[in-house]
Image (cartoon, rainbow, N blue to C red; front, side, top):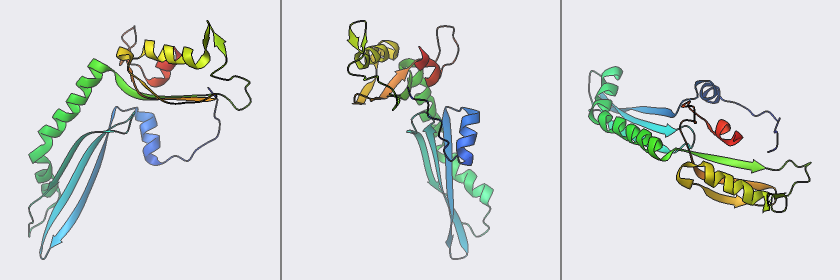
Length: 180
C-alpha cells in the first residue's frame, strides 16, 4: 500500500473523531419556527456509524407551538416521544455488529514508483490480487466482503465485515485487522 504523506485539511469534527475514535456519531439539527407570537422547534437527531457514515438511527420531531417559548423545554418535548425507538435502533446496530462484525472499507493501492502489478505478481501460485482477495475472504466475519473495483494498481473492498475483537479479546480497528 502506498504511503501517502500529503496533508489534508481537517475540520474540528475530523480532529474530534480522530481523537475520540467513537463508533457512533450523533448529528443534531434544530430550527426554531415562528408561528405569529408563538414558536416551535423542528428537531432531527441522526446516529451515524463512524466507519461507514451510514445512518443507523434517526429521530425527527416538532414541538407544539408555544407563546412562552423555552428552547430547553421544546427540545425535551421533541426528544421525549421517540427517544426509546432511537436508542433501540442504535442497540440493534451494535447487536448486528456483535453477530456479523463491523462493516468497513479497505483500499489497496500500488505505489506509483513500484513495479508491482496486482494481477501479475506471484505469491504461492496465485496472483497478488487473488492472494489479497483470498486473505480478505478468510479474515472477514463469515467471509463477508464486496470487491467493488480491481485493477492492476488498486483494489477497493466495501461492505467488509471484520471482528470487533481480536484473538486476545481486545477491540480491533481496520488498521489492526489489515496488518494481518
